[in-house]
Amino acid sequence: MNSFMLIVFLLFFIVGTISVLSYIVYNEQKLELKALTEQELEESYVVEPQGKSGENTPINNQGIYINYFLKKNGDVVVGDEFNPEMRSLILDKVKGWSPEGIQVKYVTFSVGNQQEVHFLIAAKHVLNSGGGTGTLYIGKDVSYLWSMFQWLLAVLLGMLLLFVGIAIGIGQIMTRRAMKPIVHSYQLQREFLADASHELRTPISILKSGLEVMDMGENNQLSSFSSDLLVDLQKEAKSAAKLVDDLMLLARTDSGAQPLFYETFDFYSLAEQVVRSIQNVTPPSQIQLNLLSDRSLHFYGDLERMKQLLYILLNNAVQYTQPGGKVTLDYFLEEESQATKLCITVTDTGIGMEPEHLESIFRRFYRVDKNRSRESGGTGIGLAIAKWIVEAHQGDIEVESTPGVGSTFTIYLPLT
Ligand code: ADP
Figure (cartoon, rainbow, N blue to C red):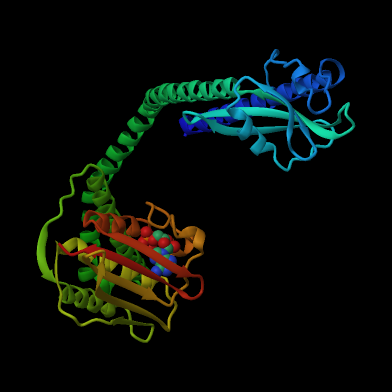
């Protein structure tokens, strides 16, 4: 970023320097030419009537290269120049030019061997001593300035490249240095995540099975308060166990220790199984859960992870949809740039999300409405895992959502 800023600043600097310099040099040359024209008119240039032009003294000093006096009808009365070849070219350039006072014009043209010539030409209407009117043109070859500017530009651009190279190099070294403690603390965090979830797993499993035993054995003898408490504790232990499982999975994906077990399976059977098991815990009177496609489709991927992916998306859809709403799972094949993809959509008519959240919901622990999410047992990990599963299968996941209308999660998976 810093290197990029430096490039932009240097470019501005170069453009600024060249523009200011060329403006100054151009004006200075213009003034000089105007002064010479005035001087020429006042002192040295005595124009004789037509026919005596040979008596004029050609002026070729002080960088003046052309020096014409034209009569009104366009005939050259007096003229001298270093390079007579240029006369017709220059006359061509000033044709139809009717200057007011002393005017200066910048012209370019090619001579002989295609060499580009840059000229400043000053012009002024004058009365000659013969009584007629004409225009005096005095020109100056500024090609040497032009090529000097080209060289200057080349040198500045060369320096820009050099400085950018140095800046990028130094930037890389500095970034690596600055990143060291960040990488280290990130590493520590990952290790902590892995260790903590591993350490929590055993006591939570013991707690969970202990509560199940209590539930089976002593339920009848417990007071109604204690039995309510037992139900609550079981629920909490279950979500704690799920959280620990999710955290462990994330820790393994971070360290690259979570392999995928590829196999070919029928996607329809999987979708049907997941929909059925969610339907079992979601009364149809509350939310209508549908599987649209009934097409048998062979998919090559990790069966367990794909099941987890569908669970996460359908569970979220059910959780964030009010009673009476609708959740739909669909899948179909899509041709995209000569590759066939499996496209899975999970659509709900739920609460939806504001656009500013859509980028972040796939981040770990991100929840749009923390209170609501906590009430429904959400931890903000589900979609982070979903994204990892999709990307581990070289796919993409996208979301579209409208607050109060619903959300659609779309997954594209390549068929390998
Ligand atoms: P959680 O466990 O909190 O549901 P997720 O990672 O699965 O965590 O989702 C992150 C957040 O995205 C949720 O807290 C919720 O605010 C939002 N979200 C996910 N799915 C939906 C959906 N279908 N409709 C509305 N909001 C959703």
